[in-house]
Amino acid sequence: MDINKIIDQLRAHPDFPKMGMIASHLGIVRGTSLNGREVKEIEVEFHQDKIDAIAKNIKALPGIFEVLIKTFGGRLKVGDEIMFVAVGGDIRDHVFPALVETVNRIKKEGTAKKEIF
Image (cartoon, rainbow, N blue to C red; front, side, top):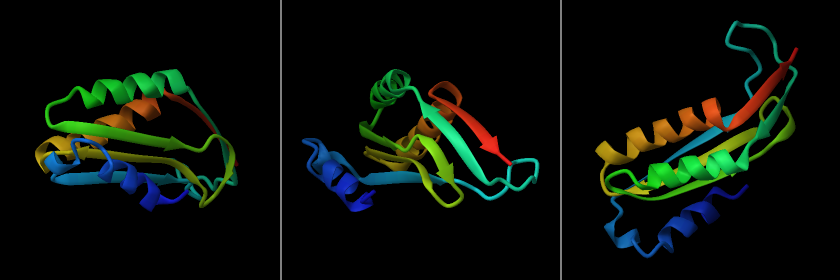
């Protein structure tokens, strides 16, 4: 994945002159689970219809102009990229909460993940 290409997509957005901030999240596979067990791999499935609905919902928030989401499903190894999210908006008071909400909602509503120990 080329993060610069995603940023270029935001720069090409018609509302880019109104953007004062781009915030991003790059999720990668950790070598330990939340309970401290060693993780060998994960299997992750993304539900694109739900992810698209989340992005549309977040774009409707005040000051948010664009939400770009790139996912990497299937069987992934430690260190592999899982998901990249970029949010473009006017000010950090709008952009940071929108980014956090996007990531949290995707993890809760748009994915199924299984850790392999």
